[in-house]
Amino acid sequence: MQRLTTTPFGRTLSAAVLETIDRADAGGPVPHIDKWEVFRQLCTARHAFAVTDRDLTVLNALLSFHPGKVLGDNAPLIVFPSNRALSERAHGMAESTLRRHLAALVNAGLLLRHDSPNGKRYARRGAGGELVRAFGFDLKPLLARADEIAQAAQAADEAAERIRMRREEVSLMRRDALNLVLYGQETGVEADWETLLSRLMDAHRALRRRLDAEALERLHLEMSDLLRDAQNALTIAEEVDGNAAVSERHYQNSKTDCSDLEPSLKKERGKGADSELKEQPENREPRIPLGLVLKACPDIEPYSPHEIRHWHELVAVASLVRGMMGISPSAWAEAQRVMGPENAAAVLAAMLQKVEDIRNPGGYLRRLTQKAEEGAFSPGPMIMALLRGGES
Image (tube, rainbow, N blue to C red):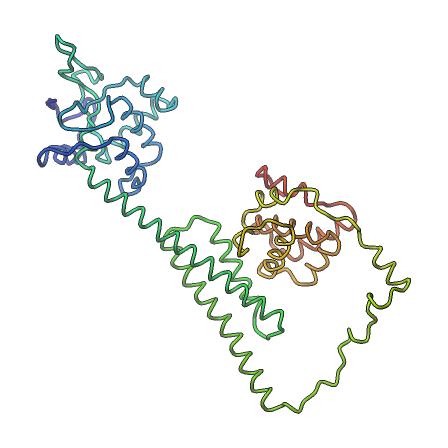
């Protein structure tokens, strides 16, 4: 169909429009393309063409007015829906909003205006009903730029895959660093573990956000440094211990462990021991399903080497994560004693989900433990608040 105009009605002509016209007219015949395939590719590569998802919603509506599935040079490429019809297919978008997004698509070089003398969109048909002239939006730029769009979509997919791989690497490095730090703490190795745990928590907060490639690369370098620091601390400790073992094999610790002087509860079931055991609640099973806890608190699952299916697995992961959150072993042990291991694990998972809002996780857990001991707290409302998206 012949293009009769190059300037839009009632609008200022721009260099972008002239460039789009030249691109559409350049070269020989363009192969036929599936209009929905090129649209899907454009959705993937939308950042490369500086268009938004709302712009694409309008383009999707315009494409729906083109008869058939294929765009080709031998078929009419001008669509001429009224604003009302276009609004209906764009999910009720307001006319002023439509105009703004249509202008964005034109400026991006994805559409051309083919305006009538009065700016209205309509078509003229011949005696046999065939379309002889139409005024509206020309889809030829999509056809002309199909290869460019496909290449941009492929580049976007490759970039997204690199980001996914980098995030995976950072997550694995974070897990390794956490295990090394916890091992160092549990074995009594002297090092600045608290600083390393604080850095790990910063990494956890960063990974909860949607990071671009540059930010993710910086985080990868930070995690590499952190992992190396944790490994070096343990290596130095092993060297020190090895030297001490060689030069001081004759040394024996004359101090008896205080736990050796205390009678075992299993061996001595006296009145005091029985009463102390009776103080612990016999039934502290959670009243909320495990699946509900995991749905409300998905951030804890990446710390497990496999899918969490049982309460004891959640307790094990929570015991691992609590050190990263800066919660002391005594605070964690007290929470398990008062609430029960399962309830304590559910509470810790909920805290991890909102860790950015908790200034002192250890102190916060102690306050919740105290409330639970007074009968004024249970994890159920906390989990349900997370499910509703509210504050816990």
